Image 1 (cartoon, rainbow, N blue to C red):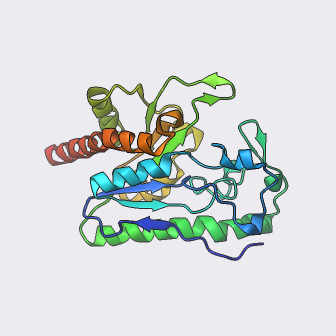
Image 2 (image 1 turned 45 degrees about the vertical axis):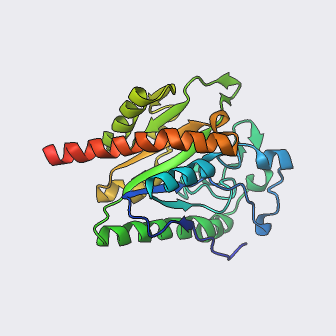
Image 3 (image 1 turned 30 degrees about the horizontal axis):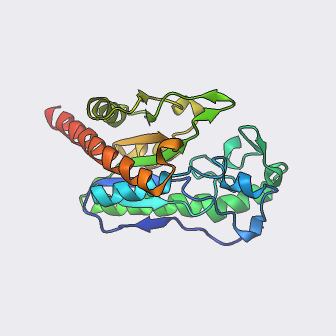
Length: 255
């Protein structure tokens, strides 16, 4: 059982912007302590192991928005940092149609070891960053960045940009509305997932309890399949996110 603690990677920590970008599925790295989880190289490169394009997009957004970026350094198949330790998806035995042999029979001790090595350092580090910024008067806006596969269980997905909310829909709705006005992306609220699918864990534990504006963004990964495409999408979405943030600030002042 691994005892190494995998702290989150924090980039642009001294950013002056209020937005804190979070990328829980940035990496497909499986540390040596867990071997290869019984997966092929192709499976370790596929979307089941990470969110392809999400980190490059998040970096492009951070650069354009002067935002902090926090991302996980380990594959979500070892531990999905957007899932609580008691969720089946935290250490999945199966992802879509793919079996994950190394997760097939995890003992309670191994679940604890992975939680202590990956989940707790990630969320402790993110929490500390957010509270530090609260203390400095930079009340954060938490935006998580994800990508999704264009075909899921054999079914094509037409949505290109999904905006998902937890308990507070204000920022998600504002970003969705800005995307509809400013882009040609097929944009939808709470698609291809919603909070009912247990995909908003990070928002629930890091933003909702403190009343921090928050939203989860999902971009179809065929639209960010190259470095150039990541940059182009970042250039398109940075002003959309900024418009969403400005809108909720206006609403707060008017209330």
